[in-house]
Image (tube, rainbow, N blue to C red; front, side):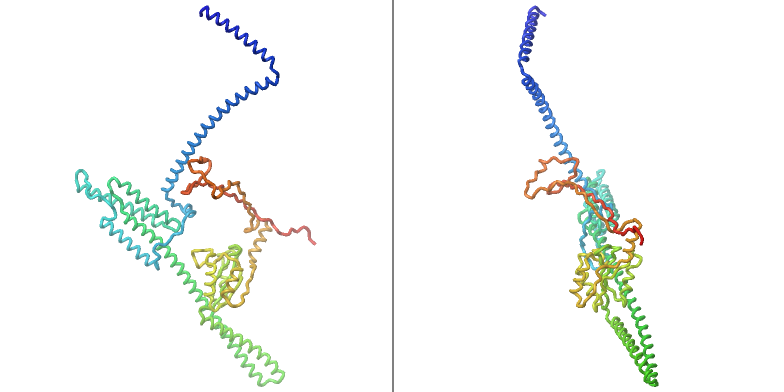
Length: 510
C-alpha cells in the first residue's frame, strides 16, 4: 500500500464523517410524519420486490400446471385407446351396459335355425378344404427349397385356422343376451391378432371365413332364443291343456251332481203328486205349497244344467279377472288374466299359492262370451306397461285401476263392478304386527336426498372454449366424446329412513 493510498483513505474517512454528519442533521430536521413516510416507502419498495418474485413463481407454476395438464390429457387419451381394446366378459359389467340384440335371420322355428347353422358350418369346411379360408404365399422357400417352403406355409395355415376355430368354438358357446357384442368383438380381435402374428409370412384369415364365423355366432344365439320361445310356447300350451282338462272335469262333475239332484227332485215331485190325489183340502194346500217350492228348485237345476251345457259347447266363454297383490308386488301392479273354470276363484286361489307370500285380491271378475278377445284387448291397451317385456305369459301390468276400468268399458257392453281398495288382510295384519313389535313396516319409507352444489351448465349460445384453452383439473373425472369434454357430475346420496309409526298408545284402561 503506497503513500497515495494512505492519503486517499484519510480523504474517504473525512467524506464519510462529513456525510454522516449531514445525514444526522437532515434526520433531525425530519418530522415524525416524514420519518413514517420514509419507512413506509422503504416497505413498499420491499413489497414490490417480493411481488415481482411471487409473480415470477406463479408464472412458472402456471407453465408447470399446463405442462402437467397436457401430460394428463395425453395419458387419458392413451387410457381410452387401451380401453377400446379391452373386451369385457364379466357378467356384472355386461349387465350394466348392454344393448338390445337385433335378430339377423328371423326364421320360423328352431329346426330352420339348426339347418341354417349346418349349412354355415359346411361352408366353413368347404373353404378350409379348398384352401380359401386363409391367404398365404405360394412361392415361399425354406432352406432354398420350394417344397419345404410350401410345407412350412401349409403347417402355419393349419395352425392359424385351428387356433381361430378353437377360440371361436370356446366363446360362441358362452354367447348370451348381454354379451353378444362383446363376443363379436372378441372373435374379430382374435382374427386380427392371429393375422398380426403371421404377418411376416404373409398368412392371414380371409374376411369371408371371419364372416362365416360371425354368422355362426348369430345363428347359435338366435337358435337359443328360438328354443326358449318354443319352450315358453309349449309351457303355455300345456297350461292351456291343463285348464281344459280341469274345466272338463269340473263340467262332468257339475253335470253329474246336477243330474243327480234333478232326478231326486223329479221323484219327489212325483211322490207329492200321488199324495195330492188322496189328500184332503188342508193337506192338499200344504202339499201344493211344497210342490211349488220343489218345482222352483227343479227349474233352477234345469237352468244350471243349461249353463253347463253352454259352457261346454262354447269354448270361448269364460271369466276375465283383474287381481292384485300389494304385499308381494306393491301398489298399481295388476294381473289381467282369463280362466274358463266354472268357479273362477279356483284359478285365483291357485295363483296365490306358496310361491307368493300373500293371497291375491280380486278387483273385478267379468264373465264374457268371448273372454279371450276381452283379455287380448286389455293386454294390447297396456302393452307398453307390462312388467315383463319379454315373456308375454306373465300378465302383470303397471297401471291404475281407473285405466283398466276405462278400457273394460270400451270393450265390454255390460256393467262391471270394480272393488277399488283391496282388502289385503294378511298383509295389513302383518304390517300391524311388525309395528307393534317395533320392527317397522316393510314398504313404507321416507327418502331424503342430499343434492350437492353443481356448477350450472352453460346457456345455449354461450361460446365454449376449445381444448387448447382449457386446463383440466387432475382431481376431477371427465367424459370425452367427439363433441367435447364434459365434467362428470357428482353422484347423489340418498338416505332412507323408516316412516313414523301411527299406532295408538294405550295410556290407561277404563
